[in-house]
Structures are given as structure tokens and as C-alpha cells.
Image (cartoon, rainbow, N blue to C red; front, side):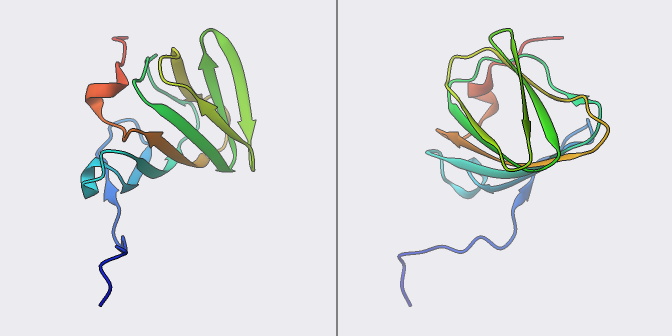
Length: 121
């Protein structure tokens, strides 16, 4: 049996209190601090506080729309679009739309609360 691969069969579901589904496929929950890959579904009217992460974040929209406020600029992505947000940018993620937004997020290095630098509301 080869040791050159590892299959992930059960993503870690991150507990949330805002209705957002976060399934970390790879990341700190699987012992990978270099990268995190997560499948997410943001419900309508969802938002997070501003943050200034110490990681690069790639987002790919599977279905719906998602709003990004990046250093004061509003960017809206739709199904099939993707974005790279460089570490150090001041960002606020939200879904002010009427339908859920399903997407994949990839963080380099892996997402952790120690690196996200969320602002208080």
C-alpha cells in the first residue's frame, strides 16, 4: 500500500453561530498548516466582521454571489468566478443577496483564528 497519498473522507465541520456551513477538507484540522481547503455555504444576509488575515485566500464561487469589501472597494463575484486576496488586505466577506452562496476557499498558509485578525464589531 502506497504512503504517497491520503484520502479525506470526512471534512471537519467548523462550529458556527451565524448559519454559515464550513467544511474544512484540508487544513489545521488534518495536520496541514501550509494550506487549508474548505467548502462553504453562506446563507442570505450573512456577513463577517472586517479582518486583516496573515494568509493569502483564494475563493471560487460554485453557486450564487458573494460580496467582498477589500480595502474599502466592493467586489461582487458570481458563479464560476474566482479571486485571490493577498495577505494584509483589510477584507469583509458577506452575502447580502437573497440566495445562499456556495464556494471553495483555499488559504496559504492554512486558516487559523490566530492568523485571521478579526476586528471587533
